[in-house]
Length: 315
Image 1 (cartoon, rainbow, N blue to C red):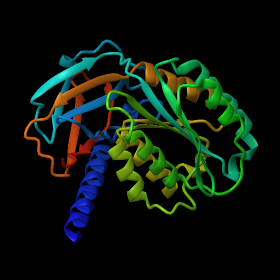
Image 2: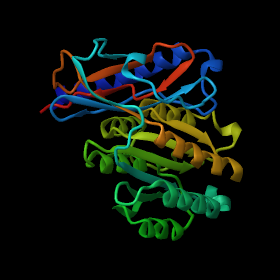
Image 3: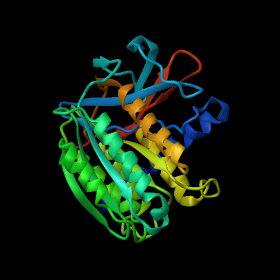
Image 4: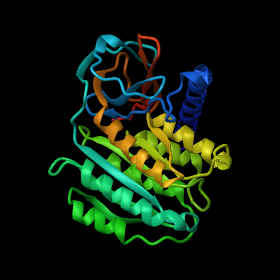
């Protein structure tokens, strides 16, 4: 038991080291897109297949379409894949979205507008009969107010009936969403959308638990960030950026009502411009270790937003 604990701890340390190295290598802020970006984390699907969903932008944040496998270099644990199984330039795989609503007291003044913006997103982005979503609220505790469904009326009703009040159990909410998405079919695109104004205050889970759960879920994390500029270098915000970066997601400023509308428009663009890639990794062993992924564009000035690795789950 102690051996498995040490192995898991070592794997998580390797994740953090790899993420810090990626951040340090990016150095030049001018090379970052206008919306805060992220690198890549995947979990192995059955039959030793790794599935990646990623987006590509120029340095100004404009989405780049119609690229092919020839435009990228892919390394899994520093090795090229044994073979690429599937590549799709604009993925139409079904969406499985978990929307996490911060209902803490600090967002009470703008909560009604967030509800309206979220319901507009649900009505206009989810494809009937194809996509599904779930609604989870987090304040002093975490509650699933609407399980995964494709029924838009149920989803919007759940959002409309949320009431603000309490603290912020963000880590616990991310873990709940990650576990729910880990149960979804492997051929779906898993998305966590977090609407929050800041850091965790009352979760039972620690930051490392939150990171490990998000890695194992395959989810891309998109944060609609209502924090003020002075809060964005706090320890909680820095940790949130690491979790988002590890998932291949984005943090979208949304303090003002106009920014909130723009944030949801950007999320829509992310979902409609995702590439999908699956491959068989070389020298693969199901030993529970962390395997780093590098997906690099050959052309300069292109930024790939993808997960940074996965755990090779034992059989």
